[in-house]
Length: 569
Image (cartoon, rainbow, N blue to C red):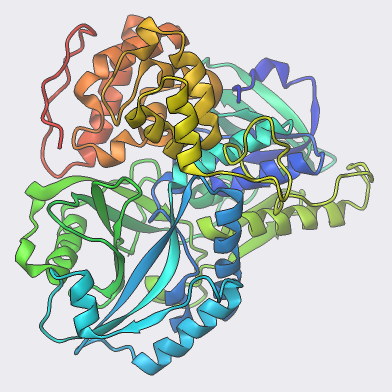
């Protein structure tokens, strides 16, 4: 996946310009490319830099939505969960959940049993994963540290854990593999018109400062929480969304020994919260808050009260562990792009369905929705565009819909055609092949979990030897991986690399800063940064990490020959 060159796009009239490189925009671009449409995806920051890297990292059926009778959304979400296991097998993992019952729990066991039966049935995997009702003794046999007072048992059911940022990146890569042009760090600053119909976007490349117009038959706004910003180009008072903030904290599994994800009630307000073992075996995260947010959309971070709320959850579930701020590895905060309800509805009860809108000038916007529903959201949007076009601009011989059959990048070996029935991803087989080529097990395991079959592309850099095999800390990062992420995944900044491509920001206490000097030096050579650019990159990333740690971390040294001595946990 190469970042498009802006001036090379100006001479082309695209079928679609998709604004927003989160999971919805990525899925839309991939679906469009698979149908044979000429599409360009434009993102003002980095792919997955907004909500799509700051979710609860779950592809789930939305069991809690049954409380608000959103049966259609639950059925759709459960089916999409099963689809994700097929389309992204390298980035998804079936996760057992325990739905906790205590004396003060408002839920009725018989009603939950009925709801979970529905949950199992609509998944189509009734025979593979069926829920169970557990006694108090069975729960404590699995999790002896759980609070015993008032415990009445639990229901065990299944959802899917994922790496949300990597799913988005590999979806973008999939779009590019089928012909889409993709451009991150490029901001849409306005729309263009012909005969009162929108026919393109004005853009500024934030890396070069270059400005241009990208012409297209249709413009799609899939910017999540930023949707109103694009809508205001045409309607200055647009207020379609009511974003809410969700915060998570990260703990070490040795401090908070959680083996199954937990569906429980907050001791503070009774809201649903989730302590979840991460796909990184040594970490657990707890989320999420759900508070109305009316601040700067580009500067969302945890507040002290958010952190305390989640610490209260941890200590309510495992009171003997006495979890404090000192135990927190890190945290993150993101925004849910919820459609503003007509009435004054509680945030947790605000519907999560998506909505497709079309302006008088022909701009399509898709708002609301969630990670789990990205494929079906993209399909519904493109089906509507194609139907309303009536062959006016789009050619009549488009390919049939295929996004439900073609896996995302990394799910298949490069030699295999990406079609239904050809998906073969077994982590241990990928790891074994890498080891057979001389890659150490720890690196092979790390690469396979991030890149799937694309790990073999990382290995090509690593096999160049010498400097390419140099370790850079940050979750087993090596120089080879830096080159791969910059040259094959359009990483353009330290934040792109350490947050979205490798996730060191989320799971390392120092966010991967222990060797930030050498990391920055390597990226400087690849991206042509000046010395001032490099130091600015380090400062920018340090500030970001600092905002997401409850206690101060050491300011990094800026000499690339120095290595900061920080304790890794």
